Image (cartoon, rainbow, N blue to C red):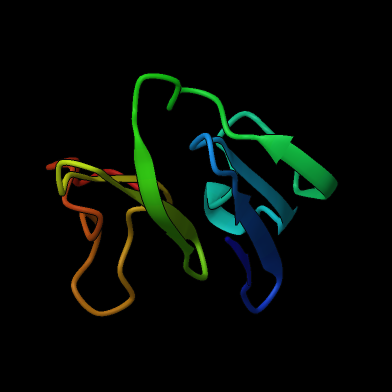
Length: 93
């Protein structure tokens, strides 16, 4: 499937590989990438995850696996309730 978000796009292949490109504000594409990628690149760290769906927010990314588990990355802050909004238990931005 291919999706376009406000300033980031993504594609999930039939074999479960996730490719993202666009704005990387808050690390929503990848923590180790520069501010933007203008070509699709494979998201690292999910090699053993059978991805069935994905999404990208304003400052975070997430995937859903075939067992119903959600994996998230990016900025964990919240403008309303402080840090920790991604559910990792980490209260630092």
